[in-house]
Length: 369
Image: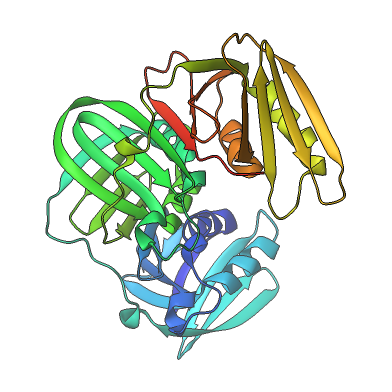
């Protein structure tokens, strides 16, 4: 039975949108598959890892009425990528096999029943629903995502806080050593909602959201977050836990401020990093009158020093930081200038963007070097 016939790119594009959450090896074999559903000229593809589900739709040239089948997402993706760009593709199902036909090429793949695919349904909870431009949400996520923990036993750190309060949307990520905060004014007042989005959901959203003014509809529920934009519907479980009180971490009374050219500091750190200790990855910042010295040393007693001319007239500071933590924020900001605010050699540094009206804050704890 023919499931669909269409041009290669009409099948490849929606498959690219969902394949990011498909695990190569899984205890449940069907989770390595993608659910293909066709109904006339409409095709839908669904993938899930039971935590995150992405569903996307596309228009095709020809499709069967209400057919569904699951097939290895990775194998189908590799097959479609290997075909010529202008190829026409047909999917035919027979018994427990699916044949992919394109020109003189034939690929016969194992299938599993579509009705056995474990789709995740949206709950009945109405939650809080807001709409904002895709480029705005993408930028907010990019500004904080690098500060998420990787595999911390404090599971609530392995994600990003997504908080709506009144007319403000706030995103916060922290791994316990650094914290990234960003906020955006919304077009109207909303209620209060607070969820922790898992790392995988954040990564997929950054990949899938377009840098355009097209809208994304966000629905925050008690145990789910849903993002609908273009032809994509991303439904994610949220991390069950209490996010740390980030307001206690962000300094408010620092008096030593230093404005720097973002790229100048980034390039100085990159050059100094050549002679950094591979394990510790530490950098010393020596701030004195109108000068900032960036110093890295390693176990071979080698040293790199970069001096930057700055406008600074307060007391000298000698403070150490994780090099990667500083470079991460400089790589993800787009502003020309940043402001660093210091307490003393044992206090964290606060990095902000001048003129941003407190919409971005990045805090890094010091380290002994």
